[in-house]
Length: 98
Image 1: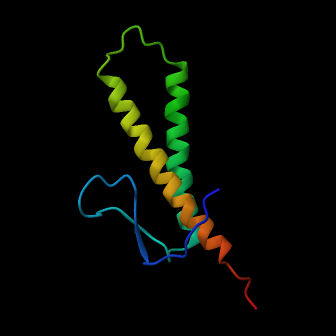
Image 2 (image 1 turned 45 degrees about the vertical axis):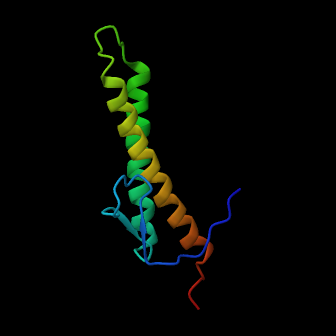
């Protein structure tokens, strides 16, 4: 299992950024509950899309739709994974209030 490194910077870029700059970032100091909720939203959307595809009949589908669907699933899943990593790191460093 990969060991998580402490945060070097407050703002962590999403790995799904495909540009030279990082327009989409995670605020590692945001409320951990908000980070977790953002992760759950993306993973839930990805799961819902996969469930729809599982139940779908592709007789009238178009081959060009496959890359569109896989790209959407990649973005949702990768962003959710990045957010979960930040939430996990926050929880590992979490200390109970005195």
